[in-house]
Image 1 (cartoon, rainbow, N blue to C red):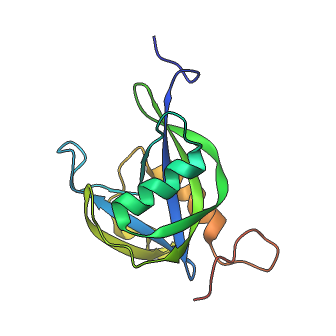
Image 2 (image 1 turned 180 degrees about the horizontal axis):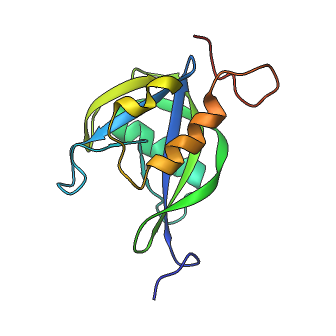
Length: 146
């Protein structure tokens, strides 16, 4: 029996720049290929979620990124796994699809429906988008300009 207490954490980065969110199209495994997601991966033993996110973004996209804040909530990914999302700011590098992805796109909040998100990722994407959408100063939004 698997429950939330024993679920393995998968971290994802809501990587943003100038009010846009980075989406990654899966190329593997076959069951997920073609679906879009927030990039990230499984937490390894001894890692904090933030450390795992930095490592995963380096491995998958070839960038250095800084976790900014955890997006409230967590989302089931399937038996034994739960998704946690952090907003993340790029520190260096240009994202490239290096591992398990074949395409990346920067999407403005009003463009989020232009890709076919993996069903289990959609609620997390919507929650993350609310955190990064440009807004008035002090609103928690305003991740960039448009």
